[in-house]
Structures are given as C-alpha cells and as structure tokens.
Length: 211
Image (cartoon, rainbow, N blue to C red; front, side):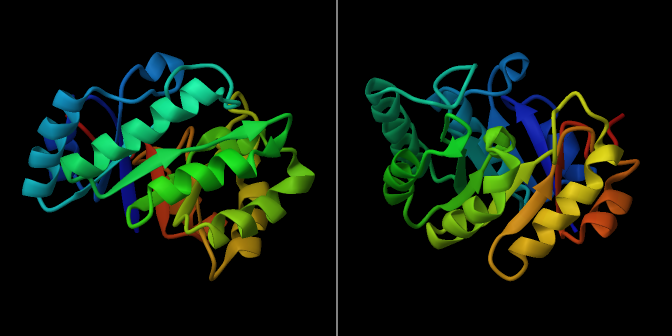
C-alpha cells in the first residue's frame, strides 16, 4: 500500500518517510487546503525526498477557494507546472471544476503542459456533482491522470460514512485510474480504509505515525 504524506513545505518530511511514507504531496498553506509552494521549497524537498528513496508531487493551485480559474490563474498554473518539472519533481497535483462539473478544457490544457509528469487530480473532485463523477473519472484517465484524491463526500463528514461511495468510485475506476482516499485517513485506519475501498493508495497529514 502506498502512503502519501501531505506536507506543508518540508516540515516533518524526513520523519514521515522514515516512518513509512512512500510519496510526499508538497504544498503550502494547508489552512487554505494547500497552494503551490515556492521554488526554493520545491528544490529543498526534491533533494530531500528523492535522496531518501521516495517520490514527491507538487501542488499546483494559485489560491484557496473554489477551483474555477481565470485565464491569468491558468497561466500561473502552467508556469508552476514548468517550475515543478525544472526542479525534478515526480509529478504535480491539480484540479479544475466549474459549476459542479469537471472543467475539461482547463484540465486538458494543464495536462498537456504536465505531459510526462505523474498527475493527481486533487480533492476538487469532490466538488463535481455525484452523478457526473464516474464520467469524470473516465475523462481524467483518458487525459493521463494516475489517480484522483477523494473524500467521497463533504469533507465535514467522517471518512467512515464516505467509504461506500469511495468503493463505488474505485470499482468504476478499476484498471483505469486509482481512487485515493483522503481526509480523515490516518496511520490508525489506513489499512482498513484501503481494504474497504479496494485501493492501494491512501493520503493524509497523519498517514504515518510521527513521534
């Protein structure tokens, strides 16, 4: 099972990898749900994470709030993907949603820029209307995304109550794209969540036990 540790800058990254994290999602401002970190932090993280034999994914998100981005914001995200590539990261994490639907035009545009990098569609996925999510999974798989990060419902809902929906999504996605549970997944329940959902990847800020 792959345990992805969500890190604000490089805080606790070494400890997390030594505790069993296989991959790092690097971001800034977790109080906003995560935004793009600065280049200096990306460089530091790449050297640290890859030196410890793990992988690093960089959040590409210009601001907190919704996931419907303006043209200047999309240009900013394109530049951020370029920076992540230049820094030697393994992949990028982003998501575009507008009016309850996958913003396919924006997502396709950014995916082209990220071609060759590992791609995760982040928890913006949960802002997509539930009736459209299975179709969105198919589109994201076609665009080359490796995985979708999802809580399976409102983030305020306990993860246990979201497991049936996450399993439905995972079953719909099998063989095409990974559904990675997040939001309330910890080192204590990770194996149970993964087994219930039928996935091999889990995500969180407490996904491994830190001292």
